[in-house]
Amino acid sequence: MDFQRLLDEIAHRLMHEAGREGAVASYIPALARVSGAHFGIALRTCEGEEASAGDGRLPFSIQSISKLFTLTLAMRHMSEDALWARIGREPSGNPFNSLVQLESEQGKPRNPFINAGAIAVADRLVGLYGADAKGELLAFMSHLAGEPIGFDHEVAASEAATGYRNYALANFMKSFGKLDHDVDTVLDFYFHQCALSMSALQLARTAGYLCRDGAHPCREGAQVVTERQARRINALMLTCGTYDAAGDVAFHIGLPCKSGVGGGIVAVVPDRLTLAVWSPALDATGNSLLGMKALALFAQRTGLSIF
Ligand code: GLN
Image (tube, rainbow, N blue to C red):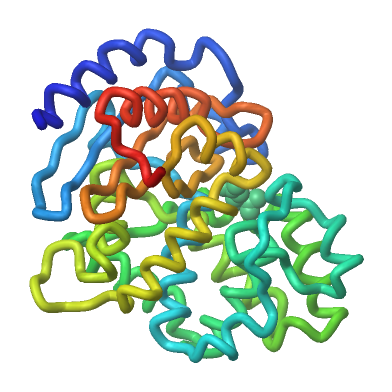
């Protein structure tokens, strides 16, 4: 299949729609001033072929897509029992920053892809790496991307300055005895992971292990996670990766996806490719409006789906 041509077509068709509908995330100035008119798309096949179109090479704030990579990092280094003791694996059916379920479920987040769950994962990584946790995350991301990946420090600082809800979630979990480490230290890590700055192409490459049964995206013979772990991450992406839109995404797109409020979405076609899209204007569930359209179009045109 001529993927470059297909991505060019999708970009050509959707670029003029960019920013017409939906709203760019506005909870911090650094995201609010990003133009809604961007659209980028990129992919990397299991064999290493890459293609990108539109703004596919422009870096943006990956936000909640980072939850995929911190979970992967935790799975690499922790026993299953230890990791899953405090985090569930059920779709939440609630917005990504909701406090409601946490109270009735005694501080145990529904899954690792909502904010509370990612904060619980961050607590584990702070436990594993101590003061080096942010550096370890950068090293891991750069190792997968094959080039240096960095934080947008302005985004990280504003996340911290305005992260009232995330402070509430973390303090709430702490009150249930479900966070081991200091709330400020755990959230400093969490705010930085949200502030990772990457392009769609870098994301497609970095997430490559998810379509390669856990094998490193480009280093032959190196394993990022086991095949079983890669399957499990994909299963969680399908059921929980797009918050309260996960059912609709499975219905319309049929691929494991992880989204972020920066407007990015990563999708996996197991054994074939990883695909990343970016368009900052979001729908009411906090998922990129045009990004979802692009994924649906891609799935329709290629017939690629896990079903
Ligand atoms: N920084 C955002 C938050 O913590 C990330 C949420 C998202 O991308 N869905 O709320």
